[in-house]
Amino acid sequence: MGARLARAVGWLRSALVFGLMLGSATAAAAPLHEGPAPLELTAGDPADPLHFGLGASVWLRGEARAESGPVGWQIPQRTRVQVEARWRGLRSFVQVQDVRAWGTADTITTAATTGIHQGYFELSGRRGRAEGSIRVGRQQHFLGSMRLVGLAPWNPNMRAFDAVRLSGTHGPFSVDVVGALLRRPQTLTVTDASGDARELRHGGEGWLATAVRVQAHRAFDLEGYALLRNYAPTEAEPERERVVFSPGARAQGELGRGFRYDLEGYVQTGRWDGLSHAAWLGAATVGYRFDDPHVPLVEGGYLATSGSGCAEVSGDVTCDVDGHRDFDGLLGARHRFMGIADLFAPTNTHDAWAGLRVSPAGWTELRVEMHHFMLHDPTGRWLRVNEAAVGIGPDPAGTRRTVGEELDLRVNLHPWGPLTAQLGYAMFVPVAAGERHVGSSVLHFAYLMTQVAF
Image (cartoon, rainbow, N blue to C red; front, side):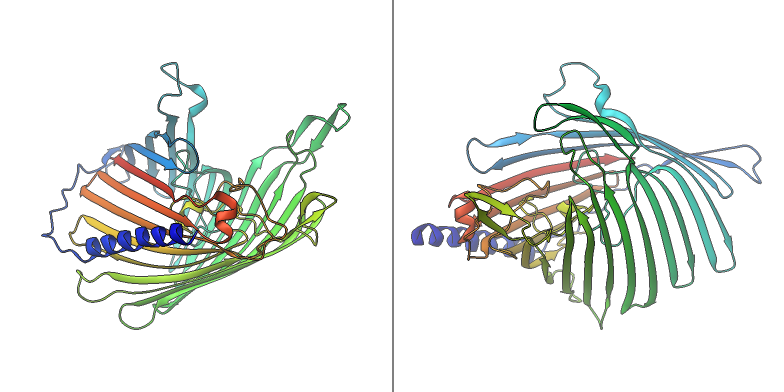
């Protein structure tokens, strides 16, 4: 084990040095070639016209993952077209998308992956310093840094809600109220343990959120949130009955020249399949940007979330003995945090990280990050971003919290207005408790993501 750990540390050291060399390199700034302007059309009275906007995009990501067994790979693709109409304070927007993975469709079209991603109308107005709007229909939405509700841009389908949104601003103050329906009331046919079928009625599933923001000063940008979500039974989980209330707050700003901070905290209470639910999440990020653009931005942070412990009872592993303590990631953009290898959901996890980023040319950005991952409760669950268990499951006798180190390297390219690209590589080295879960082999993940948007 000592030799394997030494080799793994050597790999990490070499890769980190390589990343620092990339981050410190300088290059002549290449011009950022702007693409064609978005297509805008007008109709009607020139003094009071009706405006139209048209757009399209193609997004493609190829990725490969080496964990246990053969290397797995996939190529998801997203294609979109959209149209927007505006007249005075009225606006309508329709966006159609097709999402598919290469090599999985045996016909030219696949109806299940093609449909309306967004379709809404909006009414807005202004009086003095006050502005307000109401948006009704299928729409994208996010809260704050996207830890609770996010766009999920890594997911080829992204995320949109059938929702009503009220928003308003007045000077430094703003407020958002959103209500979304995730599943309508249904009658399900479920089978119990004895094999008998029965009907089960539920009242639907959705969420309601309020966000208040005060941009008091460049050093104090304050936000407060309150989110309530319920989970209804499904045919696969007929006993699922959950209600989660999650208030939280965020403070961010720039203290002095170049130094930025971002602090977040959330608590949760409610019911989880007949158990009490109580959980929390806290996150802090700091960064410093030097005046010289060729000197990397230095940043780092710490994230901690609560988690349920597990115990062995009558030969079986049982979790949530004292209630459900796993933080519920709700509808957050999970790939955005805790490393790009997607090995950690925002529950029962601690992540201490540090990184550098630099733009050696106007159209490039290089990033390197190092993460140190631990379990909050060493007897608890280790879950991926999709909440699937990692490795062989929880260790009810576990005492070691550290699970591994992850190195992330990313290169962002924007050589032309409509074209963007990102290359990424992650290496995860299991140590201590991590070796018990997934073995001692180093895990690798790499991808190339491109998008052309007009």
